[in-house]
Image (cartoon, rainbow, N blue to C red; front, side, top):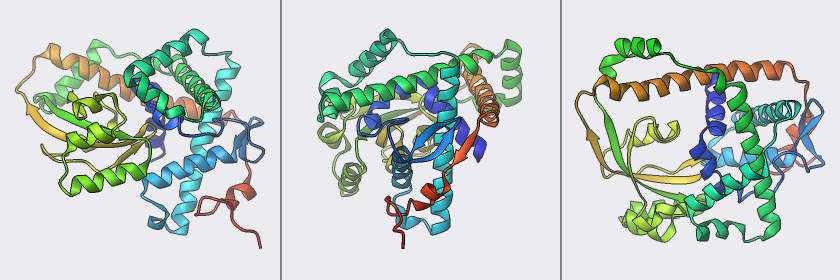
Length: 333
C-alpha cells in the first residue's frame, strides 16, 4: 500500500496533462502551498509543514471518501497520518530541489500558464480568480512549486530510466496474449470545481437528464461545448485512476464522481471498440511506455525513501492530535 501511494504521487507530479489540469483545484485554495502559517504539524530539516496545508489536504481526502460519517475514530487517525506523510514527502522533495539549486524560470512558468489558458480557454480560466490579483498570484506560486517538483523528479528519477529493445521483446513474448486485442473507448466528461455541484448533476443524471446537455450547462472543461465529448482513448493514455473506472463501464453507462487532484469528474462511455491482432510495430510503443512507467515507479519509491532517511523529520504531535473529525481544532477541556 505504501509503495502504491508513492507511485500515485510520482505520477501526480510527472504527468504533463495532469499539471495542465491541476489549476482546477489549485485555484480554489487560498493558503500557502508551503510556509506562511504560524502553526505547523511537522518540520523537515527545520522547514515547517503548515497546519493550514495539512487541514486542506485532509479535507480533500475526506471528500473523496464521501464524508467523515463513513469513518470511525481509528480510520480517521490513520487518514491523518497518511496525509501528514504525503506532505512530509513533498517537503523532503522541495528541500532537495533547493539544495540542488533548481528553479523554474519566468519563461517556463509563462509557457505552462499559456498551455493552461489555451487548454481551458480564456473565459473558463479567468472565472477561477474572482478574488482578484492576490488570489491569482497565490495560485501562480503554487504552480511554480509544483513544476519545480516535476523538474526534480525528471532529473533525479525519470532521466535515469531507459527500456531496451530486448526488454520490450521479452515482455511481448511473455505477455503476448493479453496484448492481442486493442480496446478503446469513446468518452464524454464533465468536470467540476466543487463536489456539491458534481453531486447535484449526478442526481439529475440519475433522474434521466441528458449527459451532453448537462455538460454544456455545468462542466468547466473546454470540451463542454461539445457536450463533454473527449473522443477516443486506448488503455494507458489517461491517468490510472480514470482507466480503472472507464474500462469497467459498458457503453451508455455513467461513472460515479471521481475526485482527483484536478477536480471532480463524471464520465460517460459512449462506445467501446475492440480490434483484432496488432502487428509488433503497433505493440512496441505502448509496451515500452508501460515498462518505462513501471521502472520509474520503482526508482521513484527507492529515491524518495533515501531522501526521507537523510532528512530530519519532527512531528508536532500536540498540534496533530488537536485536529478533530469536524475539520477544526479539538476543544481543550
